[in-house]
Length: 147
Image 1: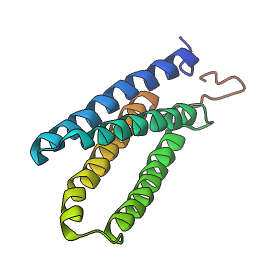
Image 2: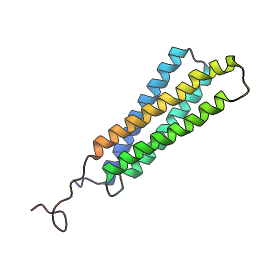
Image 3: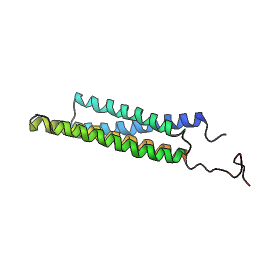
Image 4: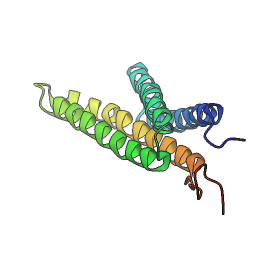
């Protein structure tokens, strides 16, 4: 079977989506139980699924690059950087609003719930896709024939 087939890349991304969504949901569930969250924590579950969708698309496209192992590594690094910047902005908005300290104390578990499942989803996605892509060995000669 041709190693770079579309079907292999599709199922790699599909399984990575399922695994990262499950891992992110598990972390969100544990945080919800630990903090005694109520219905507002539904936003955390929706954001964890949104992060899993976005990261799946990024890693799916990275598999089609000329050097997929390097592209997956870069995609993982930049996904974490973009996610961190967005969450730093969110934390800044929460801290610098004109809300009382009681409202801020209530928002801290929700902000933590947005951060941790997203990071887990990105890392699980990166690990699975990196494992499946592996290193592509180029052959010797015109069509990659081994000597």
